[in-house]
Length: 213
Image (cartoon, rainbow, N blue to C red):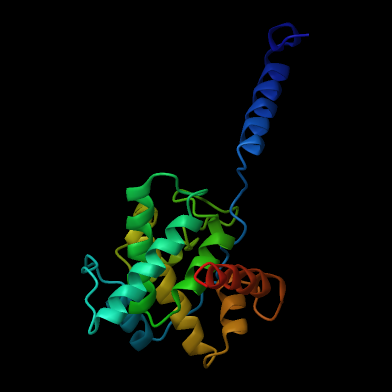
C-alpha cells in the first residue's frame, strides 16, 4: 500500500520514517549534550566573561621559534587527516581547526580537549541543536548569549562565535571548580558529579592526542 492509498496521516508517517532512515544511513545522530544550567553570575564575573567573548577575528598564529611553528603545522596536518570523515572539504576543515586552535589557546585550554568536547557534543556539526536547545559545535545554551553576549542567539551558529563562547564557558567552569576538569566537564554538560559525560569527552580527547603520535 502506498502513502497515497493509506490517506494523509499515513502518508506523513511514511515520509517521516523515510527521512529518519535517510538520516540514520548517513550517520546522522542528534546532538548528545548541551544542557548547561543557567546560574546567576556576579556582576564582575559577567563583565569578565563579556570581555572574553568580545568580537575579534583570530590573528594568524605567530610563533617565537621555528620549532613551535613546525609543531603547529604538524598538529594541523594530523588533525586535518583525522577530521576528513566529518569535514571532507579541505579549506573548511583547515579553517575550523585554525579557529579551534586559536580559541582553545586563547582560553588556556588544550586543543585536544576541545576537539574531544566538540566530537561528543555535536560530532562537528555546525548547525546541531540539542533537545535542550543548545546550539552549534560546542552546544552553547542560548541563555549565554543573553547573559554575556549581544542577545542574538542566531550568532551561535557562527563558527568562531560558537567556539569562543564554548571555550570561555569551559574555562569559566574550570575556574569555578578550581581546576578540576572532571567536575568542570560535568558542569558544562549540566550533569555535574556524574561520570558518563566527562568520561566520554576525556576518551575522545585521548584519541585526538593519539592522532598526533
